[in-house]
Length: 351
Ligand SMILES: NC(=O)c1ccc[n+]([C@@H]2O[C@H](COP(=O)([O-])OP(=O)(O)OC[C@H]3O[C@@H](n4cnc5c(N)ncnc54)[C@H](OP(=O)(O)O)[C@@H]3O)[C@@H](O)[C@H]2O)c1
Image (cartoon, rainbow, N blue to C red):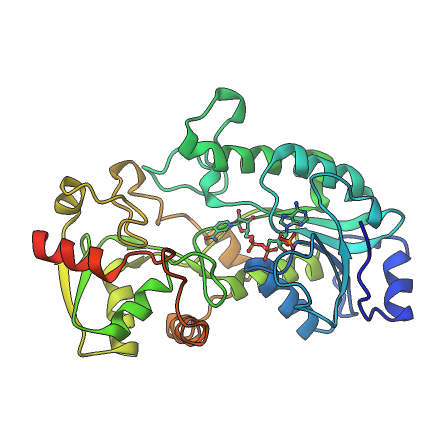
């Protein structure tokens, strides 16, 4: 493990070594922040926001994903699954654990760092809920890893176990952030980016399900701003952090209006798609399909909204995502949410 030659100043180092301050006082001074990860998508958005606000950021990662992305931050190299000792003896106002998936890996970070940070922010997921057939608020029943969940629920069950580890160790110094589908520039999946790109291509566009079906997602930059605000205001607790539910049809209307009003939507209902063997969620990107998940896009976010969660306009997210997707030349072949050939086959067979 090694420390990069990041241009951290003496002042930065001094502050990062000082005792962890209170987790509850609101402060406008620059914060010292440790980000476990920080270079792919949500973590990247968080680091961008933190640096833009003048905070001092230390990244801890293996240096494999986008090395050198943030020369103005300090980078400490290491593998969190094996050894965090490169961070020994240091203190931060907060650690932001963006990409913890395994309970034992998160336990290692909490044990090593929990006593040396003012706040432990853990990024969880709305997939922690045991039931998506009814609307869930923060108090909904969670998946239980000890109950041997099926493979499709393992991710959520592991995240729920991680939440418990962080809460047990850090108490009110813990902020648990449960995002829904995260969208916006640098999205490593081709779920949301598929749609503005698809509308730009024009022609007959396969739209799945019913226009009244629910959609729900949040821009990574809005999640990042929320996390920063939790740290700055000392806000602990568990929050569902996603956008307001909107009709899926409204989402498609916005794509069409913004990108290409000449595109020709062709609606294929859920029953027909399922009967044709199309896989819910990625068979047609963002299409829920599964009847057991009818409420997955109706998550109650009133607690976060009441506490100040801010959501940018959909048009902004769409425009920025399309600009980023265009600049990168679209997804790599094989990484598309739905290929043109597959879509045209479905249209021929089902429309
Ligand atoms: N996408 C969604 O729709 C969605 C929805 C709900 C919740 N979430 C949650 O949101 C988070 C998204 O994470 P992200 O990928 O955007 O985070 P990120 O912090 O932007 O990227 C992941 C980081 O982890 C580092 N990393 C990976 N393995 C590591 C290791 N063994 N040791 C040290 N560092 C390591 C990577 O760098 P190196 O490779 O260089 O090590 C990279 O910097 C996840 O917790 C996910 O569960 C996502």
